[in-house]
Length: 227
Image (cartoon, rainbow, N blue to C red; front, top):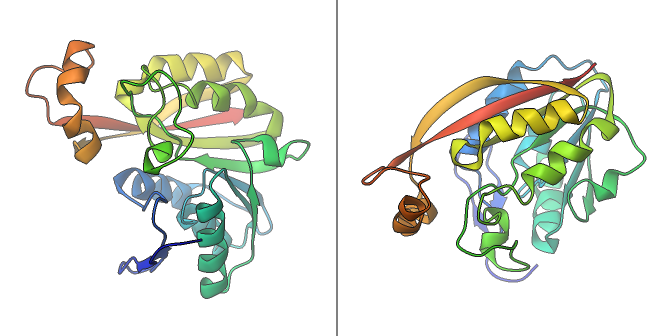
């Protein structure tokens, strides 16, 4: 990992790495949902797109056996460092989305995926935007996650997922149902636009995703259970 590391001065301090998504409001909302999720000691938890490892560490502190995955080398290094500093055992793997966990089963999957609609049709291969840009409709990663999650869950296992309503809540629920999961929105929160959405507000207006002058978005927490 290159560049200068920073430190998040929150209660559970994390080392932050350049180009790695730092925990924000969506991370905190998902962490709150994770805190409410019943987890037996030794439960198998998968954190997809772990970033700095915030959610992986939250699960590990509850006694779960945690696997964290990310496609970014810097994210993998940051999560390993944060786990070591927190004295928590987290298995950290590098790879694309669910692929590093293929063939395994988990009691819980948590994911804060890239979900921001972007002028570019594809998913960026490098740079900070890898953590948030997800194609014109914001679903380039969400759809793949919805299609593959059930295959990695034990019966009665659950997926906890956060994304913006701009990416299509109904589309996520329908996709999860089609994939064999019973899915519902369990939390809704309205938050101010961050720098990325503010910078592309005109484009979002032209796409009809926001009304003129809109400065807030709705974030949803979706819980999907394998029956």
